[in-house]
Image (cartoon, rainbow, N blue to C red; front, side, top):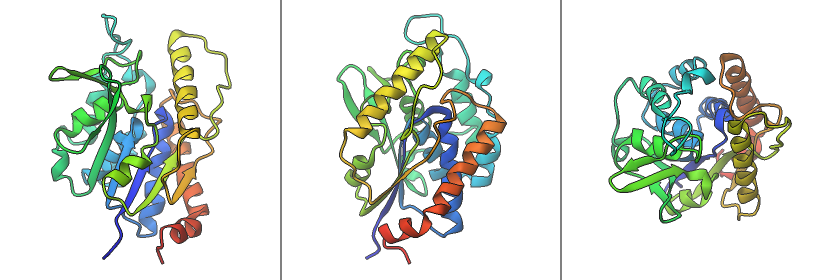
Length: 261
């Protein structure tokens, strides 16, 4: 029986554009995952990919995203940004429709956190838009997503690189992509948003470093020269290129680790 391959995509804000380059490299080498599991931007990229949106279209739309397009100030105290603009961007990539996760052509899981219980939640069914929106809800930045009586925040609070969840979903082989392996806050925070963002990524990186690796191969992308909160075409293009180049560079090692000939 063919072994089930999972692709795991970490969170990392705007650095997640590099995931698209990884997907391009895998496609060129005829490596198609049986499932994709992601956190935050990894859940977003993984979700639109699993929905069957052509990779070329995803890249095209990703290059249109600007930081200013994601800013929609929230007037209550639950988060600085409402998340409505981010949701519109995701809807646009999906062709202004929602999908049921259980009906996607590629199996999918998105990690979020039930903020009241302090527990991970793995979305494997229901609304794809809700799963993505829950997983990208960085505490203090985006308003938590409320579904029923439960409020969800970014899965990176507990699990920014959900390799273990891929195993729980039945993966025999796991290839993961980590965006923050060489993260350093190379500037002094100038705003409250910067302070929250830097603190957030420092915390996420420490959690991953101190957690068991469940992947057969982990791609650690060298992205320390890029900021996690800057979205524009130039940066997106460069990040996609890095994701592609690094994956191609390690392709033989990847294939060996995954038992792919």
